[in-house]
Length: 412
Image (cartoon, rainbow, N blue to C red):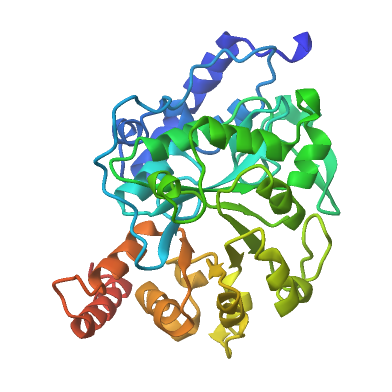
């Protein structure tokens, strides 16, 4: 691999060539580099998307020479931290507060914690050398400008992922943030914050990444959780101390993991046209009463795409299905994904008002958790409509709509 080693001089040269553009990105985000570094407690290179991410991912070197981007958990006792709330639907920060900061970065996760997230959610993949990393896509194309860097053209590959040939640049040795660094962010939060890691594309990872002793992706995943003390069934003392939900679209992977840990698991459910990753079952099979009765032996909940719970036509809501009531009948929680504030993602029934959407799913559909890109707005809704709020629920609802109207009219 000597011919693929990139020197530190080239690293410095690349970094300095990107500083100007990254400063413009910071200005557009209305934050300073200093603030981002302080929020994430990481080096600047770990925070900037695009060029820096693509460069770090494509470093193939004989050994890791970079320092950790996020410190390991502190030794300070956190016994007096505010406990996790369990009285209302969970606020699950989807890839962090990624409506405000680049997804799956330390800045995004710390922002979500600041805004009141109950859980921070991440996607776990493995680099070529077996390090577990936080990254959503199996390729770099969608979230970096790797295609603009001709020096990496020879690293473009075609692999089969979930039955489809994908061509692009796949993750290399270095990552924006590792699984362990993600865990550290949660454990060092000023209050109890849970983690919600997804075992991403386990079939593909197990085909392409090999660990010593014949271990699988799932084994390494659970080993990491065990190393940092994650254990215990749902709502047990151990779980409340370090809350976690393990999620996956692959049912066999979840079943395998159930033999390794008693931490609660959630079965993710894709669109009606997409079969399961490792069993090739249809949406209709895995949402049937009989299958939910089967899978409840291994999971505590399901995580369906919200438009399969309440179908849409011409961007308007149709009649809700019985998926939530069926799941609840089997004592399974329902954590749909993904709730976003942008108008393009809000169905017309909600009149560009994300608070109206939260209210609909909380009061009419009755779900148990929200995967959201905008942790702060969900937290505000839940605080303002809480029975413990100093504002009564009737006036709170009116206030929410008034605020949303002012925002849409550019008055806030």
